[in-house]
Length: 424
Image (tube, rainbow, N blue to C red; front, side, top):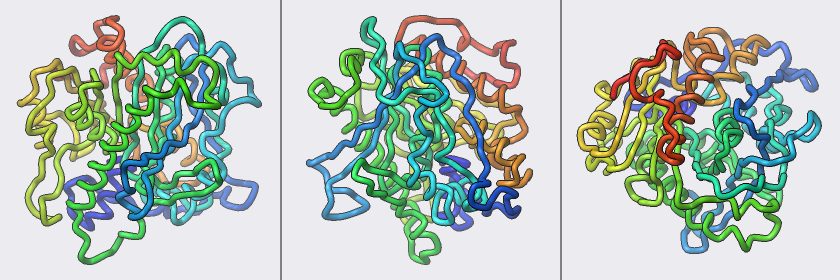
């Protein structure tokens, strides 16, 4: 449930094609694999009028035991992205990943290899820079709608930065969530690093895949609802950037996620009325049955439907596409009474709705992964078109349902985006 999450899920499923197709580690050694010669890449510029700031917060849920680490309280890292009046200069941009996280993500044990087939040690992930100023004061001017972002299975919260930055530059406060011990790795303020438990599960002969996925997705929903609780109490938190707590409008909350994050967005929306509108970026809503291998399990959001607006965005993958091709999406569609639409980005693949779309083509040109792997990750669509389409439709949806500004893009097929098939 990322070319990312689906790849990890597919490896866990060990030939069961319920969640997608596994990818192999990159077969081509990177030309820049040596120390000091690692590949570099950059993120596309945000398109909105506002410069952006970002800050990271460490949260502890004292009321919940960590489901992956019994005996420990559940700890999370989140980041907030928001408009500021102080743009970041070339030397002031926040890193894409912390050094320890970037080193682990790109290692043989990290999820960049399992999810995207990149050559271990080939890429300087922490050398990538965002467009945000670290801990900048929030831009005054009233309260702003809040959007939560949840990444794909195994992906870190940074893997949607291009989309998140764009929303923040358009005037939203965006909250990204790392799902600890599922995400490839999470770094904490004390320097500790919590790696994913999933790679250690690979190859276990008696692993109940359905149970693992249901546990992961249930944990994600609990994480998200806890984060929502914590946002209401930010005003008293020490060290928060000036003005940030005061600009969050918690009466206007949306959520978007990719792959398993898309499931998380819609299931949390089903469970928690605080989320007014949600977007599922190619996240399946059906899973292996109770024994982990047979039958199909539908979550309650698919069986009950939603009474608030949601958007489904599929890809050109064989196991994606329009809602009618996926049992979970189809059930959700049939049972929902709220506004909903379904889009398919022609020529794309599962990673096209993540930073894979902008970063991996650059890395492929430097030998980090081969052309076949790249096509499996992001398809044949031009990166700039995929990025523009994703950003435009996501912003249009949230503008319509959180701000009351309707640009009519979601009324039907658009000549601006002929690569986007529409069903409403």
